[in-house]
Amino acid sequence: MATKLLIAASGTGGHLFPAIALAEQLPDYEIEWLGVPDRLETQLVPAQYPLHKISVAGFQERLGLNTLRNLSKIATSVFQVRQVLQQGAFQGVFTTGGYIAAPAVLAARSLGIPAILHESNAIPGKVTRFFSSFCTAVALGFEPAAQYLPRINTIYTGTPVRSQFLSAKKQLPPLDLPIPDDAFLVIVVGGSQGAVAVNQIIRQCAPAWFDAGVWIVHLTGNNDPDVASLQHPQYFPLPFYDNMASLLHRANLAIGRSGAGTVTELAMTCKPAIFIPFPAAAEDHQFYNAQVLAASGAAIVFRQKELTPEVLQRQVLELLHSPSELQKMAAAAEKIAVPDSAERLAKLVRELVH
View 1: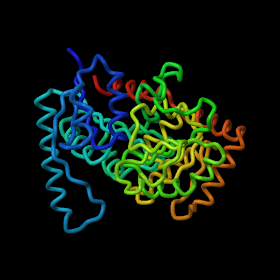
View 2 (view 1 turned 60 degrees about the horizontal axis):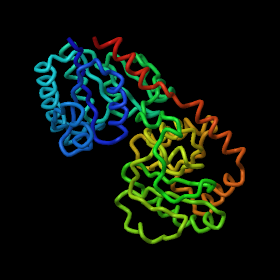
View 3 (view 1 turned 180 degrees about the horizontal axis):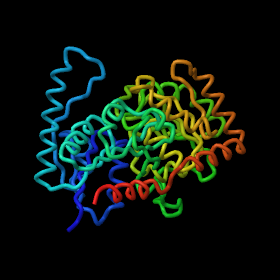
View 4 (view 1 turned 90 degrees about the vertical axis):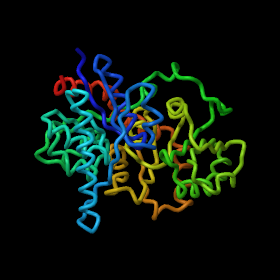
């Protein structure tokens, strides 16, 4: 009889893609999913795994008027997850953090079931910090995160990526964009929602880059009111792009935000990067993610409030004319990448959930 595992991963690609990559490494397990209505998992998961949907409240770090209300909602969520676990006779829970992790971990431990949490950021989120002590083990995407979780059973696994990012470049589908093979290609990635502030500064820099022969694929997201304001034969503004593995492999340089998923995918494809961390990210985690690559020489980091178009324009032109520096950055990124992350995580699950 197959071992049953409940995966609790919800909301964004940063939470969902590592969980899906893990699930693909456990074909002999019977896997079901725990998610939230109207989030990305309702599009990505049901075709592969049965999806249980619960209502989850945000966990507030500071005491206040909403504390009791939120605690009541969390208690309700824990009860819902307990029912799912008991009715399905699950042997373990795996979660990638976020709000859904709290009731998933608490419900599992209340039933004596192993709970494994994967933290993809270099500085753990508040849910991880608060609830990691209830977990059987916490897997880490970046080694520096361990220092924030003393006395917790942590193991460094890296963060799994979608399988296409592990494919050799020649095995990937070609780009369907008319970019010359010898062109210097910059890609701009603002994360799954795009980044309007980054978009604005890129458009100010772009004319000088075009003059230098640079081509740009700019993933703008869906929320940019000025998306049509720049037009040029060497410029491709797109809200998103499906074939990201091929795009990253083809790029010479990436510019953008530094969510854990983006940082991991860039390391996996050995891409030099210029990071502009999202200044409002919880616990400033994007800055800490970016610093992991910067400390190794794989990336350059700018604070958004300090970055001017002139500085960014000059930095890209310097890299354009310094192929040896780009090669060093790419080699440094390759050293940080953990290509077997999904296998490492699956090994941990097999050791604890059986």
